[in-house]
Length: 352
Image (tube, one colour):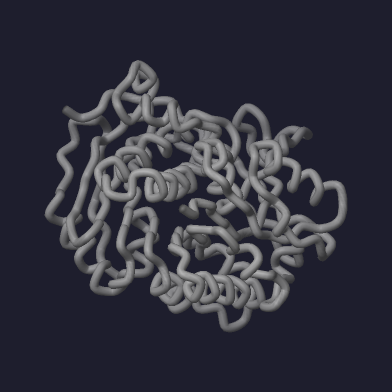
């Protein structure tokens, strides 16, 4: 049975200051590689899945180092194109106390932004693949990257792959003339069998008002009927989608988050516990950990929808405890948190 996953996106070099310094302070940056779809690829590889990453990097030291950062974790890189002159970057200012985190992108003119349809041999990339994972970010970077994304989605659909989509709405990236975030995201989602997004992203594409989530502990009572109504409305808009996952997070403070999720599968809603994470180490990539683990669950436990949701939530919670963009958690570690092992004490007890 085919079980390889192909992900598509831009790998980035992330710069941040140590010790929660602002970007304007100090004279030392810490560099880490990441990017949403690369994060998903590494998360899958860490969980034991076969995964290839499709992207574009320049033929220089930063480009080669980006490729090597993926190979280090077992991600296949043979479908990464080498062209262009620069690797995309972003600057991340860590949150502290009442100060929220900030992100500044520097992606204009990157190798990935210069992609055009016809440059990627999608049929070769999808050979022996079961799942194609993409996200709304690639549609936001440039017109050419958006067209290349839809080229890949249509070929994946023609070849019978399961299509997984992370909405990944980033309002600050939609800059090119004629960019239509709502229209393009909805078109991308219309091809998708599995869709992940946080509550804000689902509001952007569905227009359905967000359901408030104000949990400060695991005792919070979820308004389940409101989420059922929201998921039903989403299913009417995107009837092809077989599994619709909403990641739900409340930022109690800069380093204290509560996290949960709801899932619609086969027209039935599933809900899970609330995890209280009192000490967030790095919030980047939490949603990507959700997305990677939902794909892993789809491949390994396709008929167990509750496990699909519980496992995805546990993986996302673990990511918040790991520095950098990548979720470096194994399946065994995620299962231990999912099942309430002692490891869970570091994250918070589940709701009884």
